Image (cartoon, rainbow, N blue to C red; front, top):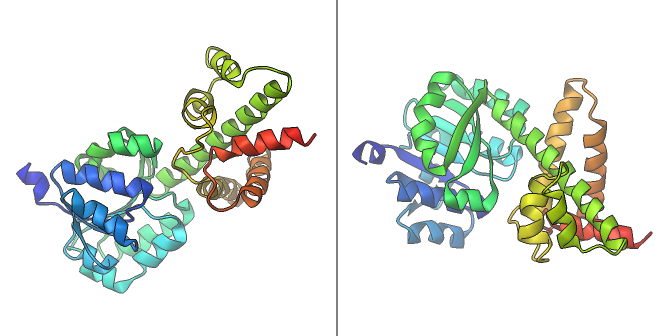
Length: 296
């Protein structure tokens, strides 16, 4: 415990995921100072023993590790482009971007920070709100092997660390993973909608698929937990899923690689986002698919 307590972690982004992750770090004995524009989010961390700051730079003061859990690459670039934030960090600090960011941006930032003797590691996660709360996230890490080895003990309370490769690799795989998850979810939603129109019980459809070759995380987790009960509350916004899908298809396009199915999925999710509004959960795509089937 004493060795852990010597590490000062600044945690920026105390939203749905970040709140749970930062709390786990506090519970593991780390010295955590958090910042989020939301006063309620800051109060939530303070209530469990973390320290809070009123700015990103104040949170970063003297930090050996700066963890980011932010909504987009644009926000990450803004934070890491802030001279006050960078100057506040301890020498040889490690920045861990756990956001779902753009891999090309990540590589560019890593190069720029290296000139200041700051190492940037990308470490996006999969596992959702439950994984963040339970410490069972899959953490996809990109960065120098020796640096990744140094941060394994810091990230261990959050889940299982998997080094994917060099800088940007974690963000690339996370985007690809979410594109696959989105395609699976929409395909399952369309299939269940067709079965419902045929007069079948959606619960029976899902139960049967989960015992057959069509099963996926969509049918095994999202349907039973949030779609069949009609709560549509997985904790991950549809807009954020769409953002990650676009990162994956944009990456493919930049490499000259076709991604026809992915691009078509982006088109459909874009339509759903427009119809459902900015507050929609990712699982609302099933509600949208069912409504689409009813129109034909």
